[in-house]
Image 1 (cartoon, one colour):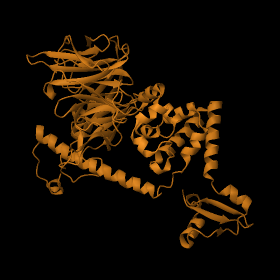
Image 2 (tube, rainbow over the protein chains, first blue to last red):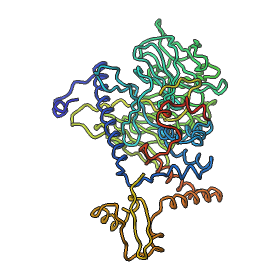
Image 3 (cartoon, helix red, strand yellow):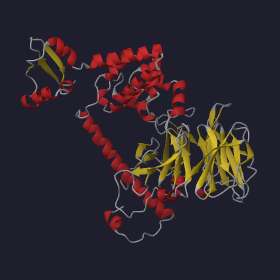
Image 4 (tube, one colour):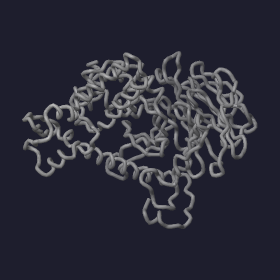
Length: 420
Length: 121
């Protein structure tokens, strides 16, 4: 927003609802403009040859000499954005990067980032259609980066799994399942439409049918909870039986091992609900401890984890030992310092060694399981991209509710449409 | 193509190397800055035999690196292999400018995305 309002120390009125979203959208478009400008200037610097550490013609050398399996090992170390550019260097590299073995093993080890549920638009207020950008936050330092979306009219991000993002058209006419890195997308029809606060979406992979499935859980008009499932192959929605327990619809489900999991709604009923997307049935299962404020289901190292609040200043992390069973094993106990009380878990890092927690005012901290220490990643009051004037309302607050964990891969979702 | 400078050793042998490589020597870098490229730069205290060992030859360095990587892979030396592949990955990452990469396909065809590439695979 403006520098003047930033410097004033008057208490700001809390922004709610539409005005909050407006403020977020304005700030996002400012960050997009800064990000694009910074990238453009760094590209110019490269063209002038200012970076001393580069070696020209390295590509020619490597092409001449390396075999398929050596390239495989090198490419496993690179992020998905670079790999998407590198696949066009030569046919051998294209073959390695697009082989299904490579794509799936690279997807398994790629790092978690957060994607904002609200897309950024830039430039705003111009004559033509503004371009839509995905807003990613990296978990070390909360640095923002923006990736242009190949689908122009996406309004919001509803779910993410395996690098695929489920987006909602802003005029609510269709759903899009797309990979933001490769730009490939699939159009999906919209069946039951209701207010976005009364529904949640989840994506999971069905190993029997070898396709991705999208699950839509929503509050029925007459009360109660309805559910429908769509297979990306057939692109048809099917109603399935309702979950036996009421679930917390507003929280995004956790997608682990071919099933989606939601926490149960009522306090005092210590259970969670799982939906296996292959046999499309809901199962209610027990949680290890009583429900409390701020507890969450998270994905930890490919398995399901539950972070509960044992006391005001301690969290307990439980892991479900096998997905079919109900045996929870206590992984560890996190004792919180005074300033870190009221932490809510956001997600875990992909290798399962760390868990990310959000504290008040959007401060992110990371707990390392191995070293058993809690460290602050971001103070939350600056925007991580060059700082703002003091006194501005930190909009990273509510990371837990406004951002979804995501990891960048080159996975494609079945039959694809390709857009440049 | 990068600019090249010509160095002349004390026994009269001429070496042509890339300017960015030559600039790693501060003395040569200063000479280039004040005199400008074009003229060959004489080095009175360095013979050809020594000069050839001292100048980093980028293609030779990469060849050595890749040979080491293949050897580490064959002998299954995990630590060395990881170290070298991380270095190569970092160099590829640093190569952000598109002019640095040698593409088989022209930029226009690249922008037409996989439609072109699928036919060639």
